[in-house]
Image 1 (cartoon, helix red, strand yellow):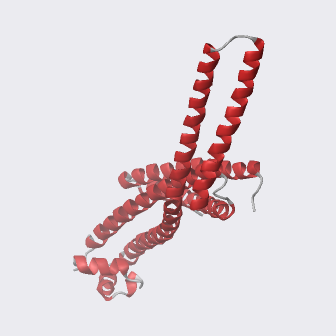
Image 2 (cartoon, one colour):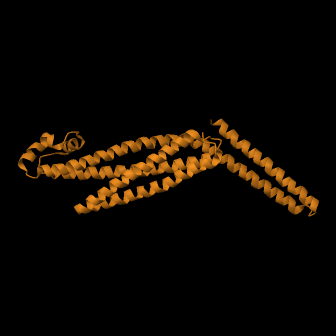
Image 3 (cartoon, helix red, strand yellow):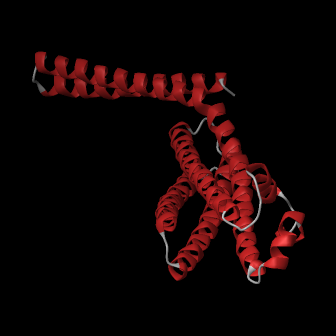
Amino acid sequence: MLKNYEELLQQIERIEVGLVSYEAKINSIASNQARLLVEVQLESEVAQRKKLDTLVADVDLIQKEIADNIKFLDSQISKNDNEYYVQFHNVRKKFLLLLGKLKSLHYDWKESSRIKLERQLSSLDIDINEVEIKQCIESSESLGNLKIFQDFILRNSTAQEILTNVEKRRQELRIIEIHMAQLLQLFREMEDMVAEQEYPVEKIEIAVKKATEDIEKGILDINSAVKSGSKSYYTMKNISYLIICVMLVIGMVSAITVASVLSKNK
């Protein structure tokens, strides 16, 4: 159980640093995908795809580390750690937003990859309709084993090379779909976690805001009393004691208010 507040804050800050790196990698993926959509040179396309694969692998590692740290802290942190709990909640919300952004990128990339694959299949010198193209893309069998391509292989000397290239695209599409499924599962976990704590955090923030307003009002009242009161040493000394007492009372009331809110949501 994490009871050291300094250690707790360090854990949250570590997640925040990871999120900065995570967001930068996601932006790089978006840029790389955009370039690939308009790339026409084969060598450049191969290099861009290798770079994209590396970026996706890096994002997966960072994403797993952040998710593991968040899950660990969620099991350790107490709602009574009010200011750290709110900060931790905001970190989870940030991670959820970035997961949503990456999810959208994967979806758009999958759709563009599917369209390119459909065009590639329809351009082959075979009699194939839209339904058959869809079946070819979704089939778990090798394209060369499908009946529709067997005649194409027999009468075309470069058919095997063409189908190998198409098969590679199809495998890439499957990898994207696997990433999407894993990402969707993690997104739902984080979404449930954030939604579960949204209301208690709102109540904490409201309680803290009200306590702050009470303190500010108390200070204003005391300042007003100082200005209108005697300037003598003893009067100022008594007022100083009064300021300290009021601050202590307001602080205790604020703490009790927040604790009361938290206890009701346990």
